[in-house]
Length: 336
Image (cartoon, rainbow, N blue to C red; front, side, top):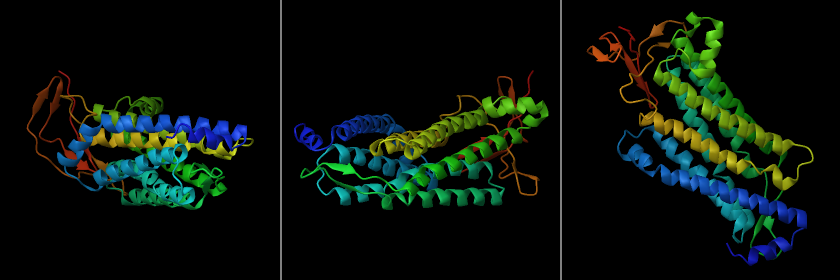
């Protein structure tokens, strides 16, 4: 960044707008630095995903959402802090990566719903339709605003966005909330948490009590992702529609929210795919899935020999299934 040209560009703006733009630049630079650090930190894991595991649609979505989010975040940071020249065209190109990164992160979480509700086709299709709404709402971003040069300089400033841009935050919030609730309900229902009473069922929903280790890790990682996206999307939407908030500050949390959401979504998928969410020696859990008629179905039967692992015994009647990068087995836990 040209250290002399930007102060000259800011001097052409009213003092309050110049100060707001400078604060925004600091936040964007910090956000991009975190994103780059996360990408470097996980290079080895990404290499394993690409070359050491089977590359399917979820893995492709993982990399597409990662690249799309990083291009949008880092590109937008450079766009507001460097002399890019043609501001309107550059801003339009960058905004096209928004409906790549954000729906991509949501699609990774949809794959988790598909794995949990695989036998219940109507539920899967309902959530896919909800994801399509997320994608459609994000498509408004390239048409929602504009930008212009700061005076005769090559530095850019964004113009006020359109009110309908807020849909790109509201719809993903609804999607992530329903996905989290559905996965949480199905996990403790499959493991018969209802046998322990209503209060303990609520405790299971909140803490994962009575769930086997792997399913508890799915629930807790889903909670972490949900909390980040819920709080981030809510704050972004409130700030965007808030009364008395300066126009530049309305979009202040959009970039950090995209970064956090993508980091968490990719973290959950990456750790699930690479098996990093289960402690060594811990038998994976969870087994049957329920179809729309309520009858239990086994997706794939795997004959296993009896294994003694501490106090846990895996019998030949146990089952396993794998779908969407999530592998589960049902193990009987017998205490001596």
